[in-house]
Length: 226
Image (cartoon, rainbow, N blue to C red; front, side, top):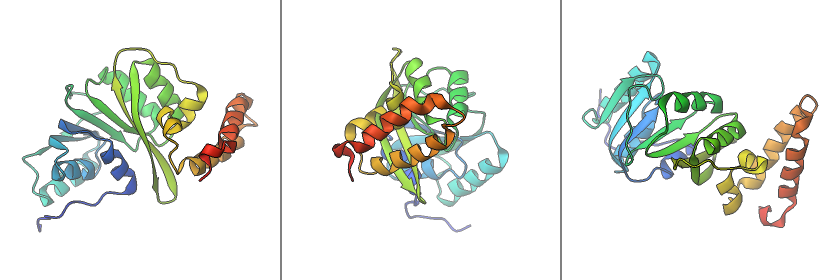
């Protein structure tokens, strides 16, 4: 196998996650799949060491192959594990969970206990539920980013556990408290697509009506015009 020496290229979705990762001691990539993110973070000196973890043997074999190809076996450890099981991130570490549903992320975080370091999350669905769960369980939102990848939008969030219960409005849970404050340029298009999904659910879930009204009001606000 020929060794790769160039910096690995990430998808826009993973690049957004990488952009939120602070300088840290160890990066824990949960559900690593191909180990692209830990490879990139080692190459760009965002972390000193990385743990690429997955609960499936197939993805972990692919991850091992990529780590060998980039000659990083001494800096990236692979672990066959379910979520945070057997891992012990510290305050100067970062835990990343990308590409899973919000409910699955809740399960992983509930089983592993509060994460001491920085937590980067990129949920594929059930985002409103996840944000409420994080706020209820002592996590504060530090930063959020909206990535566009293959004509889809992916909210990425950086949170940290401070042990205090936080309250989110339904609008903040749906859109993201930091995204609302920063007026991300892609926000209008993202909200439009979310409205499309919610309106399809409205017949069977009429309680979504007030949230849809809030999103429509947000769309009408001149501050959010692209």
